[in-house]
Length: 224
Ligand SMILES: O=C(O)COP(=O)(O)O
Ligand SMILES: [Mg+2]
Image 1: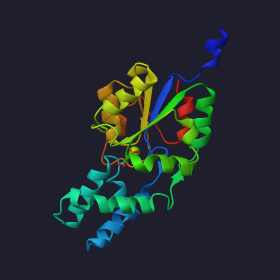
Image 2: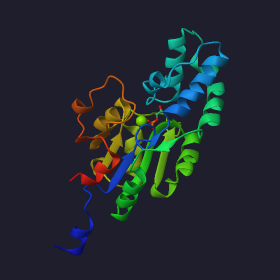
Image 3: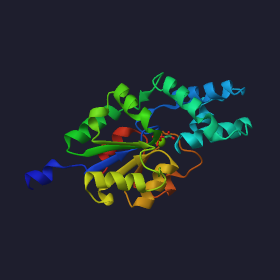
Image 4: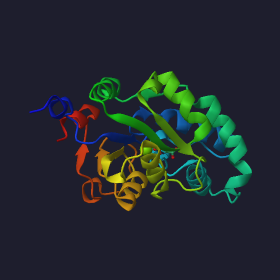
């Protein structure tokens, strides 16, 4: 065996990670910002489990779900600026890396794997959150919602990152928690691993075309 062949153990040269529900548990902060908005609009707050089921398709969908739930006929666009202020204020209240994330990113980096974040979280919030979690140095590229006209489940963000890394999309493993991640990866032709601990809704993790469903982040390192 040559030195090169023995050096690389991880099967994919690039990994694209979803953020909310995959790397970082942000549900309580997102719930806090949704509830600040709802209360301000004169509605009762909702519980965190309900908000969790609304996360994954971007801020517009999240706020749309909250307004519908409250029976509020306002247009999402009219309340979005205020929601984004609450989101900014709540962003770092209580976010937490999922167990094993940092040491797994370290091991992948040591293995020569190149990594990016591909999230539907609005772009102004992505870098501050990664910084606060201390994981910024692991990522060569970060793509948040609003940087491209499309967002997951459209394949465009994944294809854009594959281009940035100058590798075929089939070499980029997507790791995510929601139907938006699965839809984007399948549409793009990227291999997909789903985490089982995230914010998925009524969505069949095992029937979505993923190579694997993992319950602990470190299980990524066991993929062969
Ligand atoms: O903000 C969202 O809707 C979810 O973001 P994600 O793509 O990192 O899960
Ligand atoms: Mg997610």
